[in-house]
Image (cartoon, rainbow, N blue to C red; front, top):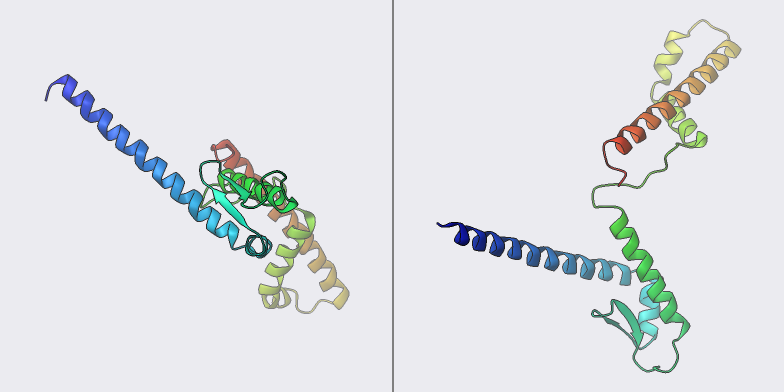
Length: 166
């Protein structure tokens, strides 16, 4: 196969890839719109009004009112734009998480872990007075919550440095 033939074959496969990628994006948007239209408020508006979606404009239009735009159309198009931005901003398989874990979240996770290990804690501290056990439990929970927050910070930092941020 000569050089020109290889180039032509390469362009054809590149073109096929681009066309397939475009189809996949359109299908994804259609699936996203179907999910969007299943939302309670959205389906209520769509069922109660003469509204159609125009793929060419990627917008909703009222089929009867052409001189003024009902409030529902503004709401639908704004909600649809927000829905699309969300679906594009967070790729499938990823989650958007805060950079810092809140104290109440870390405390909750520490308490859950303590509940799972309570029998071991009690066995390790048997023979101590009730007040001593409560103090040690409180210290353990504070230390565990701080440990959880530190591990969370490390994970977020690692994800940001590895390119997951954008």
